Image (cartoon, rainbow, N blue to C red):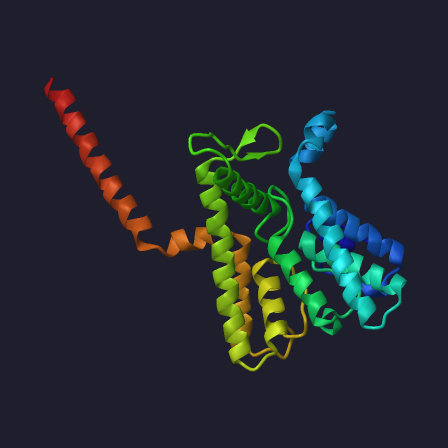
Length: 291
């Protein structure tokens, strides 16, 4: 129970029992997933709740987007499972648990995801890619960035429908204006995630793995979710294991940090700027002494 509680709140997804949440009572599994979804929301919400600032929480867009995303994913996955011959009760339970697990980035499973219909796995891939909220313990590209990109796209459409001199702003969560640098950052991270996932996917598919399963596991690794459609396992060749480990590390720091570390101008510019500052400091010191 302690292990499940800790791994739920940290959206780690580890379970000390075989079969993950599929072999524990449904009530306990539901508690774990509720805790995972709660941890996938901004942690500042709980500080605001403690300060009784419920109005501030209500106007925040991320929790609404989180619940809507889980509801949409649950509905779509349930339809695919129902079409695969499962009863409505089983389809809804598995769809709800797997959608919540994928969206929150926890990686718990109540059934073998690799046996889901292809359409259902595609929905879960999208849920893992979007991920939870910014400022939480989850991974993925974060809901906040998608909200920013969506609002910016809506602003572009409104601009096309208004006079040329009209001023059209993109707002998020009421009166918060979306700045251009925020839009650029959101689009850059989403593009970086897409590129890394694409490279890992091509390598796995080139290695003979099913393309959809390879895309599922590549997305799960880079978005630090932990679900698997069957590619990941103890018999996976070590080269592919290292590749997926790289994807997990890159996704955990959201890729841009690794790009900055590996980009030579990051270090060269620092050395040049540091040297110029040192020379300027010495000159200033000499000038002060002469004075």
